[in-house]
Image: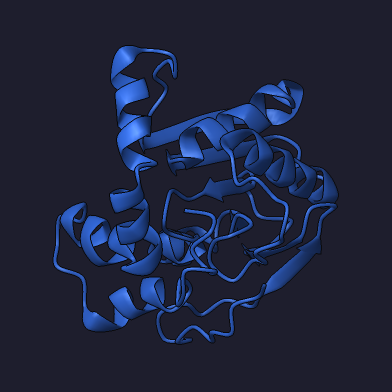
Amino acid sequence: MNVDFAPDPALYPFASHWFDSAWGRVHYVDEGSTTAKGPPILFCHGNPTWSFLYRDIVIALRDHFRCIAVDYLGFGLSERPPGFGYTIDEHARVVGALVDHLGLDGYLTMGQDWGGPISMAVAAARADRVRGVILGNTWFWPSDTLRMKAFSKVMSSPPLQYAILQRNFFVERLIPAGTASKLSPTVIEHYRSVQPSAAARVGV
């Protein structure tokens, strides 16, 4: 499944790039010069956001750094392929394949929320090619603790799954609640429009 949405160029003034991975078609932005003085920076978003999250940072840095912001499969403008599991490990394999495809070397990686473990898994497998790691608002807790087991059970319960898939709970409630300043209706619409249906939200 593909999402039919054209971002507002006033908010997201980037050319779209595509990578046909072994798992599905990946959308990403690649801004700045390959000869920029600073190292390339790989931006990995969280759930349920997409490369749109990093738009202001990319605009601010692209004159000095090559900025690559990826949409995971199931997020943003990337494909929602059937049979893909949308786990952290699977996302890391796809993002790692993109890093290899682009030939990134000496790069910085920035991860937020899910992007923390995803970017770290990619970096750990390519430690000799990573110059530095930036993490923000992410998580690295053991998945076998009682607290995490309870959290996972609640999140996978029928009421929560209904809210997430049918009511777009993450976009409608979590994004506004987790943002310090009030988001404009246009910005919220950019998150809403890439998750327009339950089928499009399969990755969250």
